[in-house]
Each structure stands twice: as C-alpha cells, then as structure tokens.
Image (cartoon, rainbow, N blue to C red; front, side, top):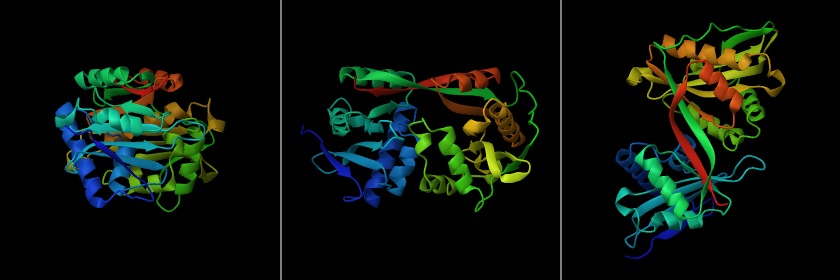
Length: 309
C-alpha cells in the first residue's frame, strides 16, 4: 500500500469547498465510529469556512486522491505554541496516516485528543508510540439542572448591573473583555472578530444567553460575562446547556463576579427547561475548577493534549 500524500492548504493554496465537505464528512464518520468528536468547535468551524487566517489545513490522500486523514494547526496566543487536532478515517487507521500528518505539523505543535474510553486509550497509545507526552488536561464537567445540590442565588456587588448582549453594540467590548480574561489561554485568548462573527451566525447563538455584568452607571463597560450555549437549540430538541465562556476582567477579580455570573447563566439555562449542563475547564485553572465543583459539577470525562518533549 502506498504511503499517504500530505498536502498543505493555506492562503496561497486554499482549501476548496469540495475538500472542506470531505473533511467534515470524514470527521462525522470518525465521530460515529468512536463515539466522540475528533474536531473541537473552532477547528470544525475553520474547516467549514475554509479559514486560513492563522490556520493551516493538512490533507492526507490515498493514491486515488481520496481524503483519508486531516489535521489542522492554529497559531497560538502570544507566546503560546500552536494547537493542533487530527483525524484519520476509521478504515485507514494503523497504516501510517496519522504518523504522516503528525510529521507534517510544526514540531512545537500541541495535539489534542478529545476522545474518551477506548478512543482515548487508543490516542494515548498512538501518542506514546510517536514519542509524545501529555502536557495539558481539559476537564469536561457536568451536572443536572433539575436535581442535585442547589446552587446559591446570585449576589451582585454594589455598583454593577446585569443585561444581555446586543448585536452592533457589544462585539468590540466583549472581545476586549475576553482577550484580557484569557490573555494566557492558548485558544480562547486568540479569539478574533471573525471567530465571534462565525459563532453569532450559528443556529444555536442566542443573545439572551450571553449575560453581561456591567457598571451600573456606564452599561457599556463590561466587568464580566457568561456566554451560555444550547446546541442543538431548544426548538430543535436540545436538552443540554453549556457554560460556554465565563470571563471576568482581571481588574474586577476578587469581587465574586465569576461565581455570580456563572449562577446567572445556570438560572437562564434552567429557565429554558433543559435537563443537563456541561462545561470545559483547564485542569490548571484551579480557581475555576474549585468554583464549578462547589456549584455541584463533577467530571464527565477528561481530554488530553500531547506534545514532543
């Protein structure tokens, strides 16, 4: 069997619409086979929109030109290494496709594994065989919105008010808040206006679910936010909400705003009639893990990121 050919798609050699469709179909096939999505939201959106700004797409093809593997790497936030994800067609695994894609990535790229159970074990074995070591862990936590330990009522400190996101008014202010709150986060800290616009164009986006804590005497100054997410939306049968992004301005920390805005989001999700809520949090974010644990969240699964020593 011939080794796979790996081609790079960038601004000079853009990903075509047909290639993007094939990549998304490949990822969907892998998800059905493995029981977990191989590509996270940002990587999937970049493939679908054929985004090449800060992203590179790698296509592994067989001798007939069919796409049998895909990888993407994205430039990290300032001072951070690139983040990468890859997927191989279930029928073409253990044939050198994953290795070929990994070799084509930047040497300092950190590669995510989003699987669980047998899929996670297989990814760990693959990484170890190629000399990669785990360097980061992402906890997926969840809780019931209808039972379990109750969360406290929100306590808003004096001088603050609550409102929801408004299109055409809050985009720049929210991006500034997000950038400040996640200045050292490899993925979230590099979110751009184009990324925000992509998400606002998604069927699940609901401005009422993006809750803002603002200064009472200047409601355009954002102190904290909780962007909730329901995908699929409630009207399409969705029953699980997500604590999508919680951001607190660094100069407002220590006032309990993170806990308050989180509780406001949980109240909102419960008001929609949802059954469950999940979130993703870095293991190194000890304060956030502590807050979520105190609010009744427990681990559902753990994702890992691997890198060369």
